[in-house]
Image 1 (spheres, rainbow, N blue to C red):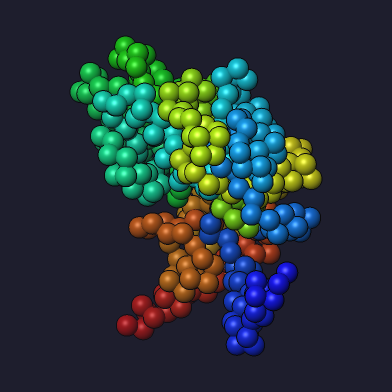
Image 2 (image 1 turned 90 degrees about the vertical axis):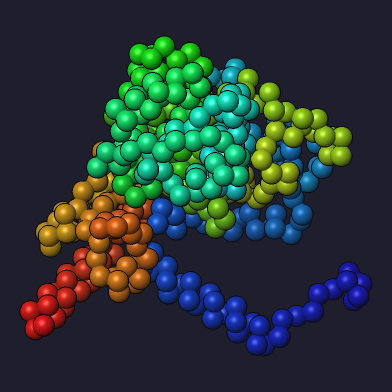
Length: 387
């Protein structure tokens, strides 16, 4: 490389800043248990690909003039997810996204394009990003009440759809809510549509975390395309694990064909939300499936359930009202003291908090969390007694 093109080395001060940042991340990773991102992965074998400007522009199933791509590997990952979610092979389409929010936006976008006069129904326990998506897409929407356990209230949904039954419902279902890990009753939702003789509808599922849990359990709640879905979003950086946010969106191809546009500039179809897409994250997911394997993920999820049960028992032992849904690794308990929330990076909402027992969360970490919760509670009671 000519000297004029060669980058300059970092200054000592800048190098120290990076070293300090890495030390901080290493330190904070030891108490990272409140959010659903697995820290168990090793993609060093893929680092050489970071030396090239790879880009998965356009439809992964259509050739492109941009040849520095990983579409072949992306399609292999999509085929695996297609089998896990039981989408018919002859009706299958998907792509790897930058995360759950993009996948959810895509699902709502397809629903809106199919039914421009449709109304999106979603529960109050739905992820905060969905209200933002609805504003961006300018879609009519109605929030439905949630039951105390986080599932959508079917009676409220039934009555609301009945009132607006002249407008096609676009159902945004949660397969594992953010705070409580609740799975909406898809069978009940389908029954409501049948009872009200609603023949035009669309159902999208946000299965960010649970989409990589429910395929590996013996008694999953109805959650996939067999339960009547039209599209689904699943995260890749959660249960699989990735240093970059990523995910998968799967949809019935007949709906995607409606929005496809041919783009001469790149010589392919424009069927995704973004033009340029990461070409390294498909390799991460492909590598994980090839090295961990489906049986490896099954074993990991069994381990996560065991640690979740341990967390429920130990937090319950100190009176924190801990519980979890069936097939969920989200352990809900009474909101602890602010210093505990900060140290353990816990997600909180009103009176509750949760710990999510991802593969890197051990019983020893749960013991340390429980000790901190108990200690802070004891200090608070002592202060109240001296007041």
